[in-house]
Image (cartoon, rainbow, N blue to C red):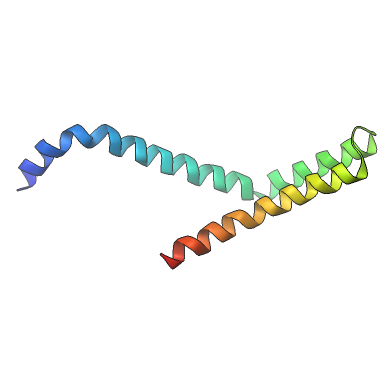
Length: 84
């Protein structure tokens, strides 16, 4: 039975490979977005842009909120996946 399933499943091998690659990329992106060093760099960049007068205080607050919201998204996705 294993030989037959391998022969008939062979045409689906590229699809499985693409799905596995997509999952790997998604995990890596999630890790990078939650990386404390990455978060700190973005918050510092917003602060420096505000100090240089490139953005207003409202824009700085929006940038900070986007970073903090992004931190909460992976936690919510994890919670949703655990419910399944």
